[in-house]
Image 1 (cartoon, rainbow, N blue to C red):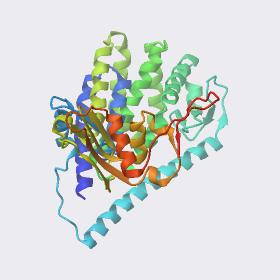
Image 2: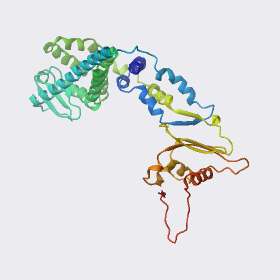
Image 3: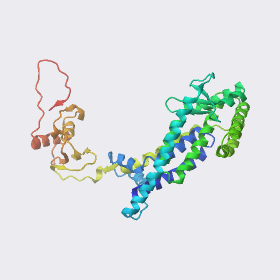
Image 4: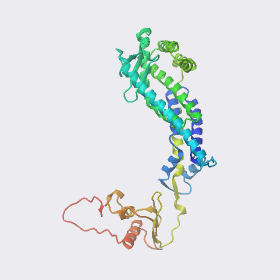
Length: 415
């Protein structure tokens, strides 16, 4: 429960940060939509998973390295800050049952809508409208819409074919084709999964409303960039919404009300709207990338070479049960390694790639070893020779090169 509370808290502040970034992108609906979609996906990607990914990496640094400072900054974002009192068995089962019931209902609703959409396609008839995707006519819809993710179909209400002029129909098709290009049905399905899993979180539903609102603005922008005349486009939008208000349930009217005014205003002043600068786009992209990079950086194993102390003349190798990442440092007159395999030691000793140490012998990869080697005082320093001497002494492994009559390009070491 603590981990879940931590994830929900992180996703909440991420959504708040996304809302602030969206204000900077108020003149670019496409970028604004990407920000809201990133906030949605954050609910599916715990920072703990990114931190676990970082734990598989090792960073060799000195005392002045920047990464430790970055890790300190990332601590508030990745550590658990909310503690939940443990629930009893009965209470936990009740909570899980309520969550599972809500998730099941929402997934069932999505499945019913999917089959309803397929039935609409089956009951529709082909249209003669020119479009790069199939267009079919139906009397069961009041508004045009794109159905399907991988093979989209544009469904057009029959009454619109009779009430809209050809230029207005072109405007409607231009708008719907942008839904196809942007794969809005796919992103909508992904957010539907987020809603099903986190239906109890109010921000999830708020993000969903922002996604629906912003994608319509983005499609309006796309149609206008293609050269659609703004006045004609706005009139087409008004006609479509008027017919939907007259023929659909009341909830459709409320959904189209306030947003319709904002869309018309945006369409009519499109020519005067300032373009979103590349600098702002880069800053927003950097901010979103930082939200992913910080948790990864928080998990990276930082090993400071100045803090490694190996005794003079040390020649130790010990098996380890550590499941963490391998680390190897050859610095000054010492070799320091953690969780390395015999295959990796051989590759370092003979200066070949690890994948060129060929053989499926299990002892090449297991167990893993911790190694500390240091040259004796006044002895020449050769890191590879230190490892080679260890392999010969500990495992009776030695590389012997013999001349051959024919020319043969070496392809690695075979065991």
